[in-house]
Image (cartoon, rainbow, N blue to C red; front, side, top):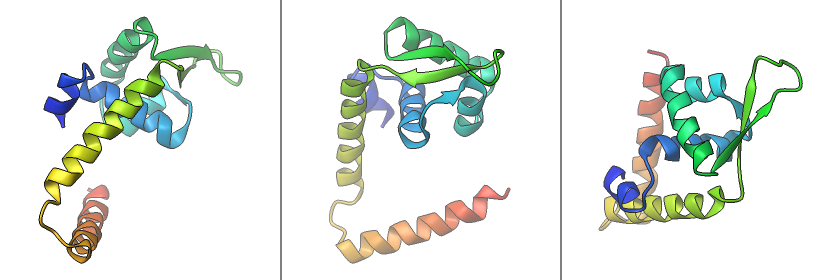
Length: 120
């Protein structure tokens, strides 16, 4: 995935930010940091670059003036579409030669493994 994203000019961390915003909606920098499992300074540097490139914007939080809320901009949409294209290509490559039933079993097993590891 990293190689495909790099070919598109997208970093893995940028993909993570846009994915979490797509799944969860606008979020604070601290929430993004927790979701991504990285230290806040890592997220801040990624967000700084994304803001510079016009992909996200920081807004004041109406409930807590210390917080900044991160939102994707319209410029992020084509980037997100390229990310989805990369993910589809990876998925096709990873599941090549598997039946629909085998893919369903694989997903089910991986979900169980993920659930088992979440608590650790």
